[in-house]
Image (cartoon, rainbow, N blue to C red; front, side):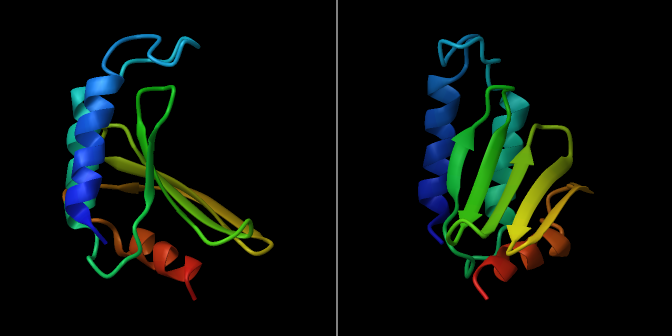
Length: 118
């Protein structure tokens, strides 16, 4: 995983999405808290994990997506509120949940990411 590239993505998101309606469809501005928490999340990920796609949501939050086809997907979302909201698809099984987040990526989240590539 290239953490420096991901951190650069967060800087670009902050620059491009800092104002209301940044997408032309009434999106909320990205908050400093969301960007800071996304950076902490990136730094806390194990370096041997595959590179996620990073995107900003219209609610002013940041999501990380790991995907291997249509039936293996895991998305983790941070909003600067010390929690990770996640959802996943593993074949026919769908999961979702919330984990508290204080500088260390919860092992449950890491295990779900690894499960995508098994």
